[in-house]
Image 1 (cartoon, rainbow, N blue to C red):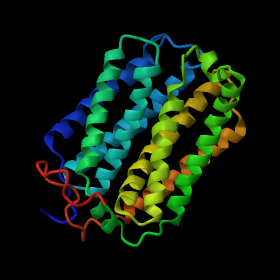
Image 2: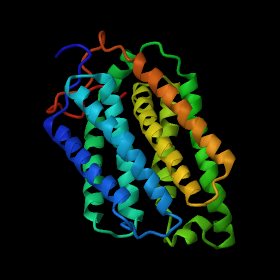
Image 3: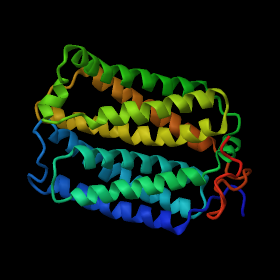
Length: 290
């Protein structure tokens, strides 16, 4: 197999193509069909902001990265996984939290497609090759940034959850939206923040999967951060109050994550690394998970 190249089995390519097609349908309908969403008014600006970022950034990024992945680019493979992870997060929240509408089955299909593609793509990635391809990249800033994300987002959500827990009430963000629970709390505290913490720990220890997860998670957080900023714009237009410090913090985090992601991706040496993905039929017990 040529050096520096990756290969992606056809099922994952087809899964990404189907994801692009269904995401285009979901976002265009959500943005341009009047009164399509049936959610509480307080949630609508957030949904519109998410749809806009997904349409104008995530879909093109997925399409471009998929194109270069099929041409064997390791850099594109990392971005492809990160954007797929963002779409998995997005449509998990739509499938579990958005009020039922005519696209419910589309959201469920996107949840399955992105989960299938993301897990399959991660399993096939040889993390030790990513580490060698990145080379002597300093890791301190990446470790610090991931831990900072864990602390800031953790404090943000726990500052809403803990007072309500001790008072025996429900956080205002849940009651105002008319939800039984905020799925974003569950996704962030149960999956995203532990992933960043584990990635930071492995990267600090110079373990291979620390490098692989860092690249993927940075690509995800760039798109997610952009979505949060787009939500804030729609909320302000709707007359809702968005605290300026919160807006500044998320803006800076998104900018820093973009810079770090670009630095990480460009540091990947695609000319002097062996193949970075395992053959499709290779057993999962092969080396590369260290």
